[in-house]
Length: 303
Image 1 (cartoon, one colour):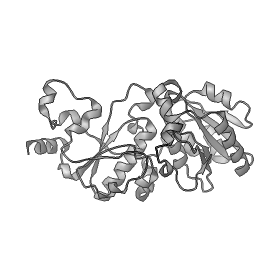
Image 2 (image 1 turned 120 degrees about the vertical axis):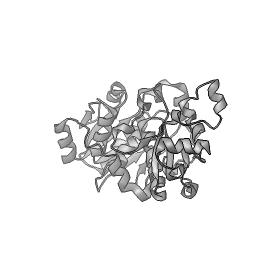
Image 3 (image 1 turned 60 degrees about the horizontal axis):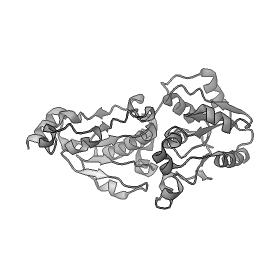
Image 4 (image 1 turned 60 degrees about the vertical axis):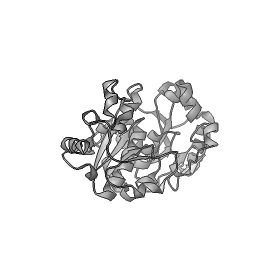
């Protein structure tokens, strides 16, 4: 009872009138987590709280929800008594263990598939997982598009005008930790020239005269992979916010096995949008034991 009252004092509302979602990973992962949390909070009519996990080890995993005008509240976990307070005497819990302080039930999403059990959870729940499917937030899709608007992010006006005028294709080539961290490479794999050449050949058939705008966290590698492509430009690469905005302004998309370019494609609103995605979302060994169909929205083409 004391724990409940202390949490009420911190939040200014009863715990049952809230819902909390853990925010971690790269910006694309964080967006999925927010979207799922928003959908549940909307269904329940409660306040959504965000619990960012400190992931400053990598630049692309730093908390990114401040990029958007969400109006969400960050849960101050360090001000909330822990379920096992005696442990605090010996060590301060790590950020990824903040959920141990949450006084309500925990909901953990496992794997990559949509899980309908999320529709049964009640107020006062703490959500953990990746939630990498639009099925988790289809009922509030318009809200999510509005929440993730990047109209306020500045970029080259001439480039934006060109994207709005012509049939540009956003091409995302993911490297970074996918290429430089053995554990990450073993999980996600690395898309090479074969995928991008097949995707470009298909896009050339679908969109004659297409121009390509290439995005990457390693523009040097991306330039080499696409140097022979006609009508090809490299993105300015100034920030992840700018890249995501420019992706969303492109009419068509060739995405990587990355939630970042997934969102760039999903946020694009052209009525004739074509999206080509890799059939192999993970490295071979993980693909053999992972259901990935729910990652792809209807109508996306797999190569």
